[in-house]
Length: 365
Ligand SMILES: *Cc1c(COP(=O)(O)O)cnc(C)c1O
Image (cartoon, rainbow, N blue to C red):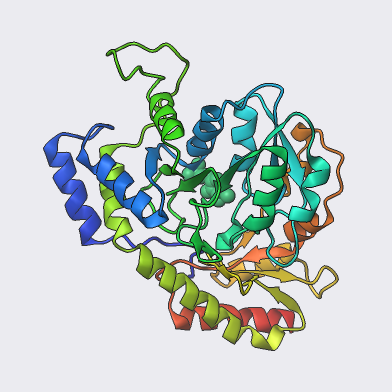
């Protein structure tokens, strides 16, 4: 058996819309799919505006620039996240300041944020890791106290809810990715959600080389080409029709893994699922015991030999030499060493999950 870690569902509907778009000749970033996709995504996220971008990383970068974050500023990010969260901060000339995670959500620990705030701190980027929302109420309280912007990195969490509020609508802005393994995909692609009109307008300008809305070919401020194509937006529109089903599948996959891995409940830690949260379980993930029978990396190797693809957790960012950071962030380091994500693509069958779990049980038990 060969079980991939992710596999998007792309069917006749995507093909139909792509063919129509290609035939229309509107294959660059002008075209009606873009605004349709933006409007529908804003509706999905319960925000006034949504702005497409070339990918999730450019969404984060644009958002930071729109909030005037730059050299001399500091931005708080979790150490346990995909590298793009911190890189986007570095692109602006600001400094990412790393905060440890908490065990009960694997997200940024609100209790560890305040001690990292300095007069230079301008923003916090909570990441809804693996689809589970961060503790937004506590983060909002801190942001209000110190007058900080909150940009949600929701790249892995489309549709997740914190206390019934959908992610991307909770902070000042939210950033999403439509990479091939995300909840929905456009190949490459991203989106920024916000209900702030001035910021939405600024993001639209910055996305298109800083173009003036008044005069054609007039670019008074430095901007970027971070536009999505109309072909990608066609795929996005077809994918949005599937988003509720995709999320349902993720929840079923999570429940099935929890059931089949039950015999290991003393040996592994299951993915968090806080009662106040509605996670979308982007990747089903577990933690091995640090003193267990075999290491996470050996488990990945053995599973690979059985045709099962898996992924280690992200490498804790504060440990990269280029960030020149001496902090000890024990939870991030533990997650980075012991976390493993298992096959979680929406096409995964119960039989495949059974196979993966039986193998893991026979290796760990
Ligand atoms: C995927 C991802 C991104 C970046 O998205 P791209 O579309 O690949 O640029 C940012 N943050 C997190 C947490 C991600 O998982």
